[in-house]
Length: 192
Length: 73
Image 1 (cartoon, rainbow over the protein chains, first blue to last red):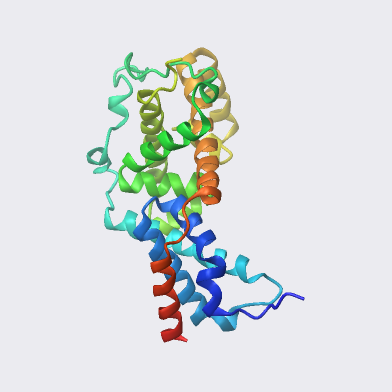
Image 2: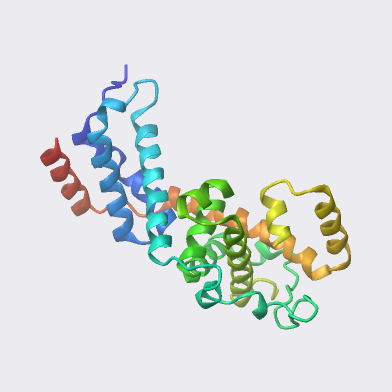
C-alpha cells in the first residue's frame, strides 16, 4: 500500500522534475520556475497540517504550485500596472489595427486566411512561435492572456487577482489577441 | 471587443444578434473570430506540451531545495 503521509525530504526527487516542467511551461523563465517550485515545497512544508490524505501528495503540491503561479503573474502585472488611459503606451492600440473613422480593419493589418495553418507548420514550431509571441506581449497583457487561456481563470477571478476593472480587462484581452494574431502572421502563419 | 466578450461570457441577445450580423458581412472580423479561438487553443496545448516534455529540475536546484526543506523542517 502507498503511504499517504507526506515526506518533505523526498519532494525534490519525487516531484521536482514534474513541478518544474509545469512551472516552466507557464512562466518561461528557468530561474523563476525554480523559485516557484522551491516556494511550493516550503509552503507545503509550513502547511503540512492542512494536507488531507484523500488527495494525493502530488495533487496537493500541484494545487499549491498553481496558486504560486497566479501570485507570480499578479506580482508581474501589478509591478507594471498601467491604467486604461495609459494602456496605449504599453504596446499597440486599436488605432494600429483599425481605421478610426469607420472602424474597419486597416488594409495592412486585416487578418489573412489561416487555412490549414496548423498543418503548414510543425506543431512544435507553432508552439515555439506562439511562446515567443506571448513573451513579447506587454507584461499585463501576458499575465491576463496566460491566466485566462492557459490557467483558465474566469474574467472575474482575473480582475480580482490583478486589480483590474472589467472595462480594463476587456481592452487588455482584446489587445493581447490582436497582437498575438499579428505576431503569428509575421512568423509565418497564413503565408502558405 | 464584443467578440472577445462573447467568447468568454454570455452577452445580451441584442448584442449577440448585432455581432452575428456584423460577422456575416465582415469577412475579416469573421476570420479574426476564428483565429483568436485557435490562438487560445494553441496556447493551452503548447503549455501542456511543454509541461510534459520540458527539461528536468537541475540537480543543484534539487540539492538547494533539500537543504532548505531540512533547515525549515
